[in-house]
Image 1: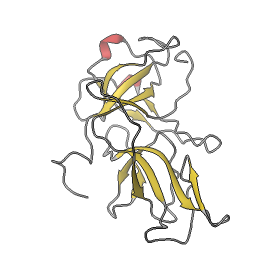
Image 2 (image 1 turned 120 degrees about the vertical axis):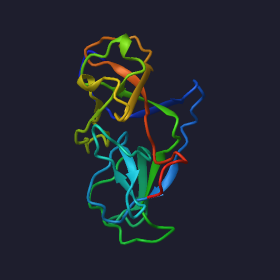
Image 3 (image 1 turned 90 degrees about the horizontal axis):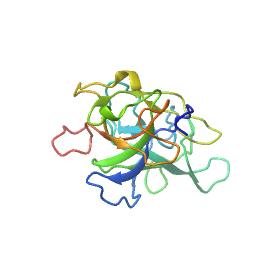
Length: 197
């Protein structure tokens, strides 16, 4: 509900131009033993070694996409374990294909995502830009706790999120205390004009 602060990261809902979103994702390798937890709904990037990493930016991001879970061979069970989040410092012992840990990532650069703001977002904010609030996710549910920074909303073109609409729901409306909004990335590692990593 948008009257309660309950941030949940970014959830893919459609593609720009109101195109249908098939909920597709790509599999991207995670460095075995990667020391930062990545939760469902977190923004992720390709690191300098081309492994998936959590993007911890706030006023700037270099997003490859949004994390939707992962799979890895469980060091205790010995078989592939699909999971909603990457637990920090998980060591599987596998560093090459096909057994390397893999993250599921929504990578379409013109995807539209739902995110809750940490304050009120009025109707006039459509078309404005905003920063993201980074908060540690919850291992109990495997979910991100990131939110859109309502106090950062402005025209600045370097901010990472562009507000394109509001979530249509009986429990949400523009100006609610913790508004659920629709956003796109202002930049992406997926755009063809970007330098390689």
